[in-house]
Image (cartoon, rainbow, N blue to C red; front, side):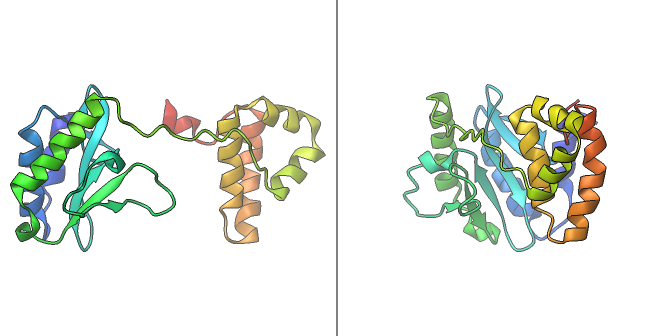
Length: 197
């Protein structure tokens, strides 16, 4: 399925916010944004850089501005997308078509485009320190070749494995995850390498 067909399918879905989503899409298409499908949802880009997304949820729909922290927000409508987890993304929630003022929405979209063109983006913080959970550290300490294979992985891949173990809530889940990842580590494979190809 082509990218444009995926986006059309997303907007064709029946739901309480279908009409409002169509209005937001029409506004985005009035600009020089390129419409793409990323992560299963419509994302609008300039020079392949994400500017905004249009999404529907259970109780609202809205715009996600990838670098919304730079928007002036004169109406005070933008919220931090995930408090404490994201520094740049902001979203604007709508509950009905009546909430959409096309002139105001378009002004926010145009400002987001201008900011992207100026290079106003939040750079991700790269944390190269890896905190290895004790369960994984113990397994690595038992077998020298396994520890060497883990050390040979990039810090990013080490962090993925560490978080995979650490985020399990129950001890039995941690142990189950550990059993699955040890052969992958031994082969020098990253946890999510199959998704990256």
